[in-house]
Length: 542
Ligand code: TEU
Ligand code: CA
Image 1 (spheres, rainbow, N blue to C red):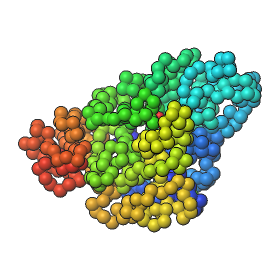
Image 2 (image 1 turned 60 degrees about the vertical axis):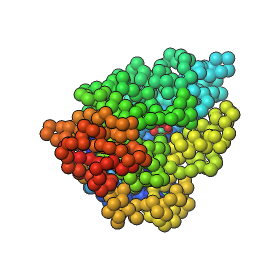
Image 3 (image 1 turned 90 degrees about the vertical axis):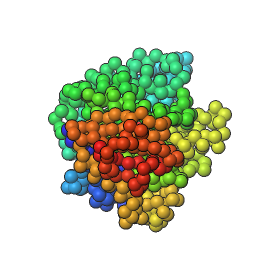
Image 4 (image 1 turned 120 degrees about the horizontal axis):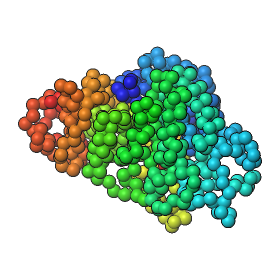
């Protein structure tokens, strides 16, 4: 199974490279950078959605699953990109959004016309209760998860924005349509699918009120992990996916160690999932903009728990950032004093942990968070609606900005920093989103020719991982060590590796049980020293 040994590079196309000067990244921009992508030593590319969309939620609101987003290019561009990837022995994983469509999709335009329209049951429609929504479910993006539509005097369900009506998978006609659109892309030779919010395609369709104020708990209990989830996945597997040599990656809130294997049945399930244990551990009951402190113990426990979950079956992904979360360096590392060291440390974790690693574009050079000085600067519906909710609850803009600058998605969507030139070489035009000012010294070009750069360290890491199957297939055993030292073994047949990561500004010692061990250092972000320096990462063959 190729995907167990693959290293995946995630590209958010809107912010990767603009080829035609309109300030918006596009497919031709990705084509221009294929040799760069190959040079990273990755095996596959995951592209965030590239389909026609009004962009209410960064392309996760698709209005035509068969057409390339016009501002990203044409189907011919797509075909050229796919051929260019395959020519370089790179695979392509597309991001399909099947829990909901855009409200501008033809299906929804029909569905909303009348209660007897043949497309009515492609979505969830319900009468209100005394001119209130059918139940108390909150949307991810603020307000109710139900939107009143006066044409038919009913409400439709949208777990995300009101322009993202949930598709009704209970309807076999809809499931057939979804399988057909997946088939279209698989027949073009795509190598994998990242299935957005797959955890929510089976919901509690009796639609009871949520009985908890904790949003993530509401997701787990009511929005995701529904009674027919395995059945729906098994149907697509049987009817479609089994006929292709592809990987299916399930994404979605609500996937837990207790239910993850339900998604990953060897015969009838997905191939792997993204889990979010570490990504939500600093979210309070109010969700993303209600941050709470996290500890290294919790962080380490997440990896321990998921390795136990997948110890004998199932398969996980390893990621520390993506388009939905702040930059990993700013969130988990030290993006000021120990920038280089901690960026390399985080990449070392990513490339030596058990599971398929996903590198988010820009993390290979240590890109950092941006700073919003006003909510109006945000380009993200989740931040904009999050502010509406917070404001109503009496939060000041300054308080909300603090949370948004810590946890918001804009952080991960600033343009890729190619060089120190205008707009970081991302565009010759006016970028759709402001470029981070630190591109003057933080960019690909400056790191290409610096042998000790984060970029070249990443290349050494991917080379190391590909040369040693222990990193893909080996067991995982965490060493008991002080709170900020993350140390673990990876073992497979005769190979045994020791990885030590000092997640702190302090000097510390190797765990005592390895101090006398004979070991050979394979890679590290400091030259030899018998103690562990601040943010020191090292990989030893033992
Ligand atoms: O995200 C679903 C998801 O896991 C959410 O919890 C996510 O973190 C989002 O930011 C809400 O907090 C997927 C996509 O990755 C995300 O970009 C989309 O906004 C969302 O689905 C709806 O399609
Ligand atoms: Ca463009």
